[in-house]
Length: 73
Image (cartoon, rainbow, N blue to C red; front, side, top):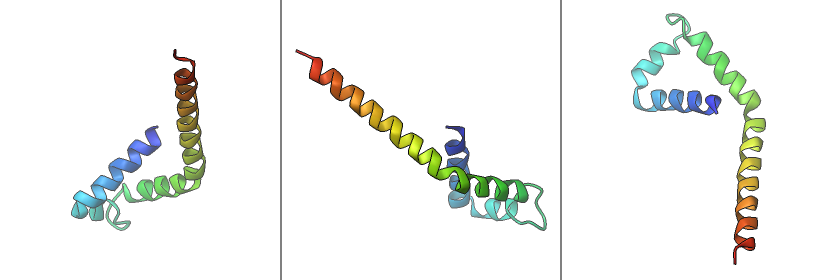
């Protein structure tokens, strides 16, 4: 879940604080730029697995709820 939270935070920063985002991602002047780029590259790599896990959990939850409803009098 932490991966999603970090991505959400970066997305909000990029959208609502564009000047600060530009400063942070300026590879010539920011020590954070490489870390941010590496994080985003890694997230792109692991995204399919994270998305599949989230979908699997949602389906399992929905199925468990449906079974519970079916067993109710």
